Image (cartoon, rainbow over all chains, first blue to last red; front, side):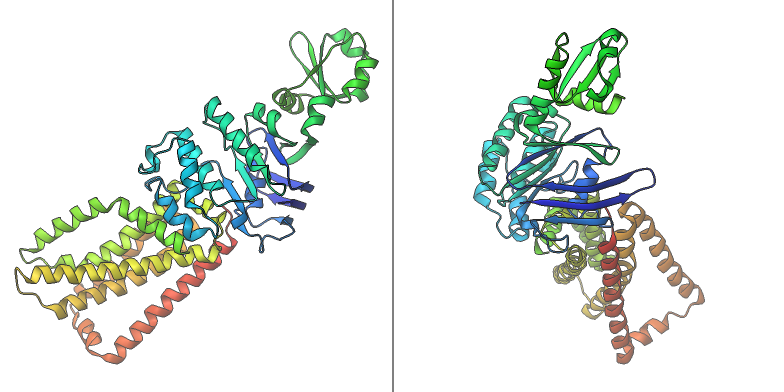
Length: 279
Length: 206
C-alpha cells in the first residue's frame, strides 16, 4: 500500500508538524527516526486519523482519510492497546467482530511462535510479551500496510531478531509496506529500504537505506584537517573536546579529494546525533 | 461496533467476582426487609458500565480504537447501546432477585417495577448528561461531573422532601399522559446526548 502526503500541517502551542510532500511507495520498509518529540508519533497519528484536525492531504492507496480501509492496516502504537484486564484469548472474540479478515488460526500461530499464554490477563504479561501480543494482533488480520510506533522497544535482542524476520516475511508480498518508527536504529540498518529522519516536526532527511550506508560518511579529524575541508562538502560538523566529527555525502568522490583523511561509514545513531547536534 | 460492545462486556466479566460478592451482600441485607436492592439495576448498569471508560482510558484504548476499522460514530454508539444493554441485564437481574426474595418474604412486585422505572429515568438522565462530558473531557473529569450531577439530583429530591410535597411524584406516576411525556422526553434526551457525543468525537484529536 502506498502512502502520499501533501502540504501536511498540524500545529500545537509549542510544536508544529510540517511536511510539504512525502511519498512512501508500496513494497518498502520505511524507517522513521528522530529524537523524542520530533513529530514521528504525530505523523503516525495523522496517518491513522487519530489526529484528524490537520491541514493538507493524506492518501493511503489513493484513498483519502474518509475512505481509507483500516481492515488493510495493522498497527502497533506506543502505549495504546486493549485494556489489560482482558485475557489474551478475549482478543479473538473482539477482533473477529472488528476486522473482516481476522484469522483466529494466524493469531494462535503467532501466540505459539512468541510463547504467549492465551489464558492469562494482558496485565500479567511482561512489557516484551505485551509488545509481542500487539504484533500478533496487528498481523492476524492479514494487513497490507503495517504502521509500527516503537514496536520493538522492550524486546530482547533474540526476540527482536525474530520480529525483524517476521517483517521480512511479511514483505514477501509485493504490495506490502511497513512504516516503522523506532529508537533502535541498528535494526533499521538491517531491514529498511528507506530512512526518514525527522527533527522538530520537519523531515530533514529522506534517503534510501543503501544510499545512507554507501554515500554518507564521517570524517574524524583535528582542527588543522577540518580547516582543509571545503565548507560545501560539509553537511554537519560537531566539535568535540579534542576533535571534529564531520558528516559528509558522496563518500567516494571525497575519498579521492581528501586522500589523507579517513572517511568512516556512518551508523544511523551517529547520523542522528550529527544531524541534530552538529552545525 | 459489536466488537467494542463485546470488549466492554469482557471487561465487566473480568470483574464479575467482585460484582457477585456485592450482590450477595445486598441480598442478605435485604432479607431483613431493606428494599434498596431494587436499585441494583441502577448501580449495575451505570457504575459498572462507566468503569469501562476508565479501563479504556488507562490503556489508551480510546486512541487505539480510532486506528481500527470502526467508524468514530460507532465508538459512541457502542457505549450508548452497551449502557442500555447493561440496564436491561440489570432489570432482569432485579426481577430474578425479587423472585428469589419472594420465596423468603412477601414482595410487592408493582413497587419493584416502579423502583426499576425510577431507576431507568435516573440512569438515562445521568448518562445523557455525563457521556458527552466524558467524551469531551475524559473519564477523570467525567467522574467529577458525575458527583456534581448526583449531588444536583439529590438536592432536588432534598428540596422536595423539605417542602414535603412528594405526592406530586405519585400523581405523575398515576397519570398516563405524564408517563408518555416523560418517556418521550427521556428518549429524546438520550438521542440528543448521543448526537452531541458523536459530534464531539468526530472532531476530537487524541
